[in-house]
Image (cartoon, rainbow, N blue to C red; front, side, top):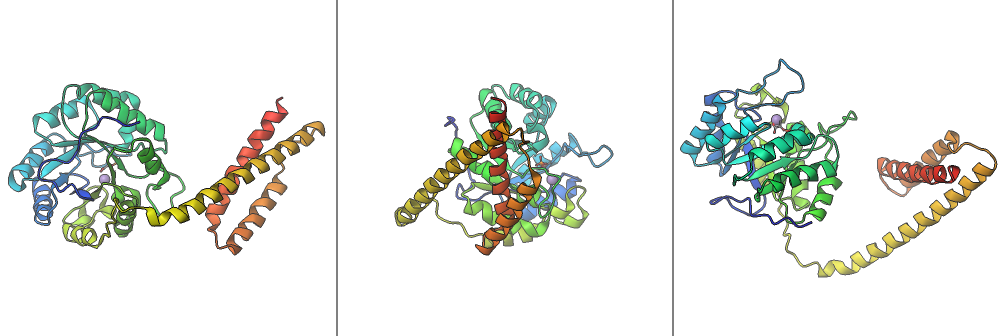
Length: 355
Ligand code: PEP
Ligand code: MN
């Protein structure tokens, strides 16, 4: 679906990748906001972010300075010439942000999950012309993300972008929020002209992951980056571990390798043909495997056997994982594929049992 979007790039902002939005997680004091803004502006950042209303997991934490922070952002505009962006979650936030001349609004991940909240925001934006960036919902649900985009689009907003900030999971290992890159990649396939930003601060949850995640986003042709930056990150009132100083931000941005998205792909065509052939073979093999699974299903039904036989499943997982490792395939990757295939086989056999 190609939405009839207009460019989110504001006058004076360099449209080349990455478009950078930086600033603290939260506006804490007027001094902190201005200090960060001036340090970022002097390093060429053109769009400043700061949360005024903070959606915190539990009550009692710092929930943002509220309305007074808008006047600090107004000062940032006046004194640095930067554009300013903040998170909005209710119609009152929108009214106040618009009155104070906020340039860009973003919808947070905890708001995108809720169609009522997104619709309230959409209704409040009817007839307004302002860029709106929509973070992914906290759960990995692309349709919900697209639903939010459609609601905002339906309000007449034409300058829309999205922010990939990762997906919440109990299975926290390396990241605060799992990147699940295939989701923004699929979004790009479905809505090719929709600008995508990456928020490596919220994905990584750790300073040292900001550089590699930003590079990965650039390698995947993302359009921009939203990075949390604070002059004294360790003392930040929220998200201290995922903010970097303006100096470090400058360093990280300068190290990024930006590949040319307009390169011709002629030289790749032979390799791509081989990939196409392999994919075809993989699909044929999968189809064959499913046919055999169905035959097994018929046998189990005729002999009154249960579908799930866990010793067999465990054997498959272990043996195949070892085999994969010997072929230098990533163990988690092999496990994940096998689990998916097994799930589909079970589904096929359930259909047979119920026939
Ligand atoms: C934020 O940008 O500070 C924020 C609250 O982000 P998210 O909605 O991605 O959690
Ligand atoms: Mn934050």
